[in-house]
Image 1 (cartoon, one colour):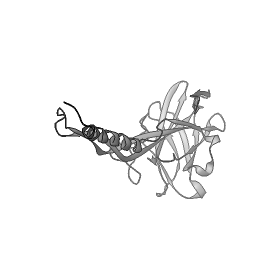
Image 2 (cartoon, rainbow, N blue to C red):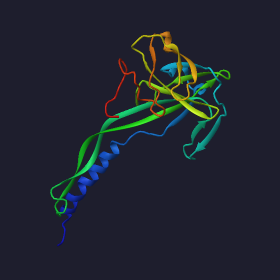
Image 3 (cartoon, one colour):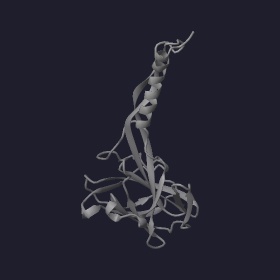
Length: 225
């Protein structure tokens, strides 16, 4: 059977249209980006966190550069914070109109709700062996989960302590905490831009889950992530 140009166009147009829409719905860069607090502008910070560790954390700074056209630097070896973000938008998946086995079955783009996550890893400014300062920064084009995790190690034992914050609630944002895995003691103090009041709370501190806090009341939560 000879297929006419009109038939071929009818088959190819939905595919091309779906590809075009998928391109429009493409996600932003989801690489974990590494920054150093001392290189950032304090005016851009959502809050500044000062941490006093009861025992000096490991401090052996290293850096690696990846890529050539657009180099990406990753740091390691000393305390950092992980700041999670999310995006929700409209994506597309390909459906088929009619029996998929039939010659006249037409593919078509079907809209769906899409979501993605990313994070910043921000390394602390070392003030002395036990004191570090961190800038909690936004990520352009992404929504904040209003949460972060302080990650560090002592004698090679890795630990994480998770916090949630709010710029609308007001509470005492300076307090002592004990980490959940090894029981390391640390004191934290948060200050907000322009000296405005805010609120910092300790969470359940599950390592590796900086966006999922036990303390939810009054703070941002995103169902479905």
